[in-house]
Image 1 (cartoon, one colour):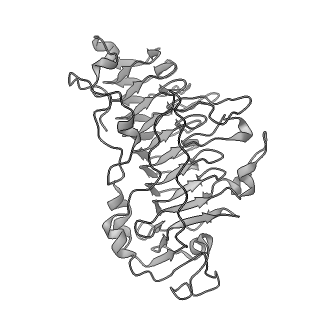
Image 2 (cartoon, rainbow, N blue to C red; image 1 turned 120 degrees about the horizontal axis):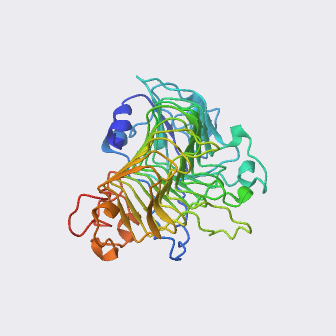
Image 3 (cartoon, rainbow, N blue to C red; image 1 turned 60 degrees about the vertical axis):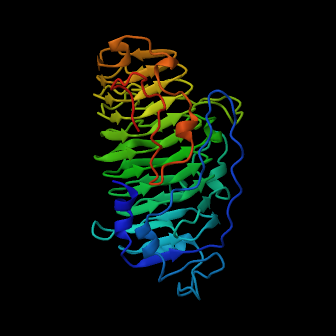
Length: 425
């Protein structure tokens, strides 16, 4: 599903609109240029589709930073906060947020569900940039060794289903988005950056959620010295049909993607993870793992048959792709690992099937164990060094997204000889 089908088709419903003063954030500081990192993409979300812009052109309920949460919610008498809008939202409503920075003092609690026929939509008004800043939330500054109370996890804390959330930028929260017990939601074109835990975490009994075109980077956790802040985590739970499409996960303290203790199959496609697991924050006892895609794990790890396809892991501190002790039947096909610090494909503790994958310049291509490998670069032989691909220029995939929000389609790590192995985004 693309944004036009997951959001645009829903916006014919009544609109509940949030507006703020248009105060755009200053550009992000320049990213570090150490060899493990790559140029950071622009943080601006992809534009809303034309259908969304048309539907939101004449809002019926408006919220502004100079409004009053007791007001009628009209243009002349707007509401003031996102929580007020979320609290009023009923199935079929659309919350459209005007551009600006929303500094939270309490996190946004989404507890009311939409329905299959009438989801609730939350996103920017037209193409405006919306930043939700959680730096003032008390849980954002939990001390070393401390724990975050469950209701305080997330600048957006969601325990609800049938929502369509798109185009928001969440920063400096105790998690960016935290969704527990969530079903049938679509999260598209979100940015979660510089949060004090995982950028986006889905857990608990959660099924049939789509996470599409997520950019999640520089998330870190001072309270754990980097031990658990990932770009995206689907962990500690179960639920069928969860799917990740077009995610880019980079420079996170722990891993790019983490499926720790998630019991059900997850599908990941057309996604990238790079530069994870390096201590950019000068933590005194750094504990980040540094894998691109961590496909499970636990003590013991549940046997979960996750699928990873057409995805790339590069310049991570440890493994590009790892089963992390998941004994299940992983399916890994048409993926590429490049220049990872340890192993491209670490699957020696699972019963995985690897087909048509490509390892370039990893410290070690594969640790197969009893897994099965068919038609991969290490099976077919030949020289698979950096000269065997059209380009190793990471800027090709770390810049702006395509107009529809998907990662750019480029020549990055495409075999020069045209062999049908490795990722094609």
